Each structure stands twice: as structure tokens, then as C-alpha cells.
Length: 116
Image (cartoon, rainbow, N blue to C red; front, side, top):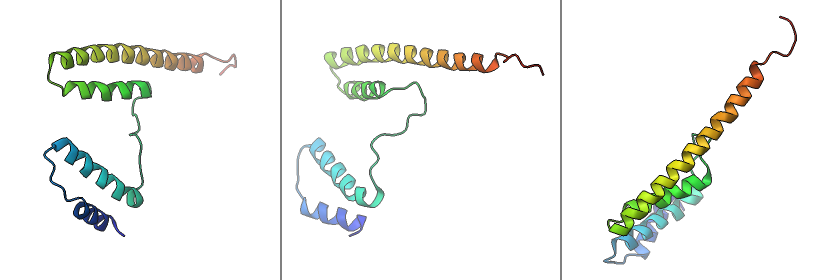
């Protein structure tokens, strides 16, 4: 069965009218993912372009994004706290990565004693 047929049958089979928008979105999203996996495959995470970014930072970013959408006093405080913590962790990680790169470059630029 192809991708479109699977989605059509899943939508027809689960033709419920829910007042909860989040519930309907989760169902729609899971239906599309289940139908797409056999055809397209499953990719767990996007490749990180910056080498100093860790899995912990990505998870913290996702949690921060969740708190950003909560419009309350507690949500705002939690978002600010996570944002500050993430910024500190990212700065330390980036600095450490650049220090490692500098050590490699210095090691490569040191003459080996052979005359040119």
C-alpha cells in the first residue's frame, strides 16, 4: 500500500470530531509519521551543523521552546531561567571547542625540525 492510501484509510478510520485541537493535531501528526515511515524511512534527529552543540543542549532548547509558548508568569520565569542556563552552557561549550581547535592548529604549525 502506498503512502497516500495509508493516510486516506487512517483518516477515514479515525474520523472523530474532537474539540481538543492539540489532540487532533497529535493524531494527524502520528498518522502521517506512521504512513511515511515505510515509504521514506525514519530520521530521529536533524544533524547538528555546529560541532560544539550537544544532545543536552538540543533537549534544553526543546524544553525552552515549550515554556516559551506558555503565556503565564511561571512560564515566563521558567523560559528566562532555561534561556540563561542554555546560553551559559553554549558559551562554555563553544569556547572549549575553539580551544581544542587552536591546540590542533598550533600543533600543526609547529616546525618538526626538518629544514626546508
